[in-house]
Length: 107
Image (cartoon, rainbow, N blue to C red):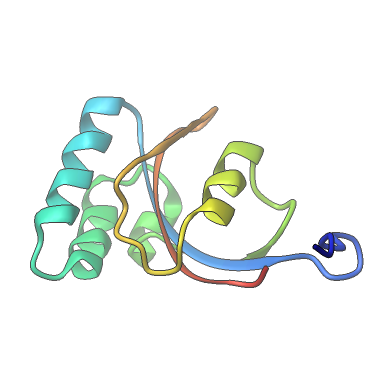
């Protein structure tokens, strides 16, 4: 297997996220998204309502970033998540609890 060259060809991802201060709220939001008829629409709505990140006003859209721009725990989750996978878990960082939706990524 070829090893990824991070310096000359960093991986890229386009993601949305919802940042909340506590586990109970993160779990509640994940339940709402999972049970919604249109999970992505519910994700966007939840981001506008609940996210404490400025990206909440953009329905959680962080846009595209390159590997190394985000905190380690956040990025690890992004690279382990399938594109357009309905979130079933959250990740904790120093900023709070993130629910992540991956739109695209390069490996």
